[in-house]
Amino acid sequence: MKEKPQFDALQKGLGYKFKDPSLLVRCLTHVSYSYDRTPGHNEVLEFLGDAVLDLAVSDLLMRQFPEKSEGDLSRMRAALVNSSVLAGKAMAINFGPLLRLGKGEERSGGRHKESILAGAFEALLGAVYLDGGYEAARHLVERYFAPDVKEKTLGQQDYKTRLQEISQMLFREPPVYRVVSEIGPDHAKSFVTEIAVGGKVLGKGEGRSKKQSEQEAAKKALVELQKSDPTSL
Image: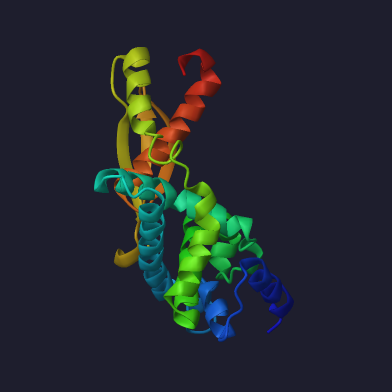
């Protein structure tokens, strides 16, 4: 395995050593690579990792904030678990160079695509779960998400509401959201939403649900509005 030194460094950084190294290889193998070369990709591991992540983050939040309501905890979890955050985690542990991609994805910059990086991170959690059990996976989630669990920031950034207020103030009309594409299989679908403010398209957002993709689009639109008129924010 030519990537062995890099895989060794990755496992050291994770603080987890795989008993079955093939699971680590698989979690980094995108479906496009599998089609081009050999069978075995990370989609099913991504499906499993998504469930493990939801459970482990829910457990982490309930222990940290036992007094919070179900609605509060759900909003906090949504702020923690979305494509942008997961892609950021994958980049932080240097997943990009180790991803196995097909020629098409390689040419189109797949190593930097949010959906591919986020999927690989979820697949990693699924692989750890299969290799070492729930506690090993939970420990990994806690290691990477505990620093993010801060009451002042979780669930408080409602970009859509803020953008609605600004759009009404500046243009006397609400933002317009439009789902422009759906990516991935049914069990791990990502949505891409385009947003227009004042009749002008200001960006796109991607998320594991339509609501998440709208929040991401609103966040980008706020950035663009701030560039054109800093006083508006």
